[in-house]
Image 1: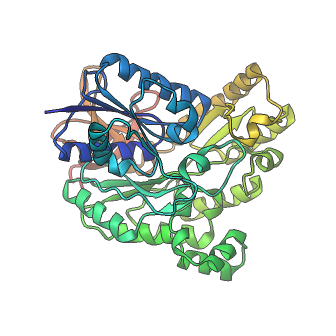
Image 2: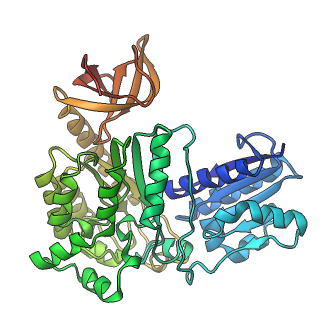
Image 3: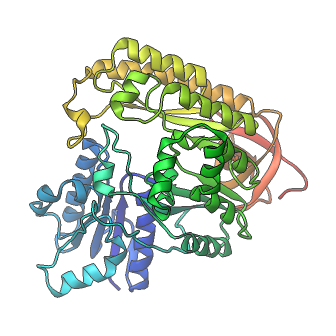
Length: 461
């Protein structure tokens, strides 16, 4: 039996696609082994979100070649799209596969075995309008199932290469998603996470052009809000998934702040299975910097969305991404962004010192000193740690529920750890419990700095 090893870099979309390719290879008779082992085929699902990601992708491709000089080394994904010319010259790579050809991985390898001159499989991602359909029935080593529902992005933020490596928005047919969710539910999964490159755009390619133009304006009148909610395909998808037997939780990936409208949030709050964990990518709390980033909202508009979420959900988790030291960000701009972060009180803030990405507009803007970027990141990180502690503290004494995921030993006692719907990490004594159980109980204290302890109820879910 031939062996194949996978390595994934980057986002949850890449993780999903790797799982799907793995199942295709297994169905073709390959045995999957760990990436560190000798294999007949190595498939590296690459990332290109930063120059550092490019370098890591190259390193893993070269590592694969060193592990077995006779193996077939496959470079797939975003690095392939962003470095088409360079990658052709890399002698470590046998086959290159673009972002909309991964579902043909078995056929691609077979073609290469027949004719080693056939080694380049890239569709022009910026012209392709078809969603690359995958289908999975299990997720390796996870209790929650990530489901890719959308690909591509139309936003063109000035720091981001993704629209050029993933192409324009392409959405998966709703009936195909629901069918996959049903399969996963029948395999025992209770929680699904919807993911995509720009999740908020799910379904816009299903709607007519005139409607999309109206929605792009995102006016705040009651009439437009009602129309936006009625025709919002992401909201319709979440509601349809909530009707699938066996699925107890629905979690979503990162959202575009402009999707947070009152009707949208009100409808979400009426879905009992929806997890109130909202990741809204802010990137900066300074309007000048947001404009330079080509983000299409202001800080005040973002804050209005936060207030709407808190109006309809009790103690929702609101998390975000912040870039510090963006080109042209002055100390005053940073202070404005910092003040906004303090005002919102995010549960968790992912802080990224700006990293130059060749091929983007921001790469040619005036750069901020590296030491200054690190200093600003440290300042925000202190705020982040305090906010995390405060949000977790607010859970103590409340009755909550946790999905058991992993075993954990602390002070000689065995626990299961998992997450609440708000994605707060909880530990509960292991006695009589199993992986994938959903347990209700009272949160009593901190067990560690980042894990809360729950005492389970006698009658559980």
